[in-house]
Length: 115
Length: 112
Image 1 (spheres, rainbow over the protein chains, first blue to last red):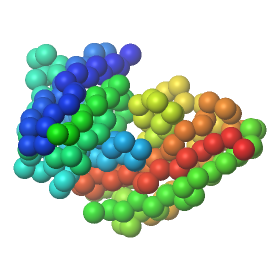
Image 2: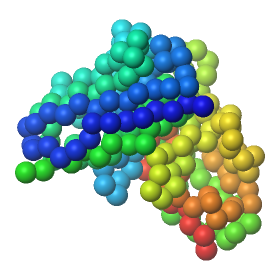
Image 3: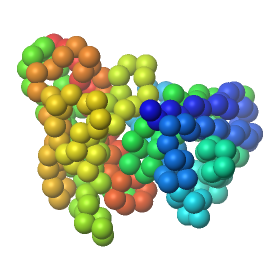
């Protein structure tokens, strides 16, 4: 059974940084691209970023490009999202998901950007 | 960016009745590999989203056969036959053919 366990959310001031992690089990992690999707409070889903299975290609939404960096450690089966220069509008629950087709989802990590 | 437009945005349905959700894309979703990456997701209250359907009409493992997907080109439909109480939630379509990936606004299904 595929399981994606997330960690790393919390409260951060505007301009601050935070790193999210997503640890996979039940899959051959290095076989799959991975994605991040977020959901602002009371709003719909917004695609954030995607990384190829070998880490050699990444894509970002315009809203986070230049501020967020997706990476992965295939030896430890962990996906990361490094978030810098955080803004109030980045406040959301962040989900990691398997592949670009979002076949399985993590439990979500709440990120609150507020002074 | 590809705009995904769902309708209706709110869908009250009586138990045992059918429900249909439409999703229209602003561009055709056929990938260069010949596949159409149109997926449907269910988000129950307080839960993470869950994929129900991938590539228009393929049901994920464990998804009841009451859920079916259809469509082509720019017009797609999710149908729920014989709605049950556990089907309450918000349903999203998403295109995975073009970057950036984009979601519909969501359709809230509730029991009438």
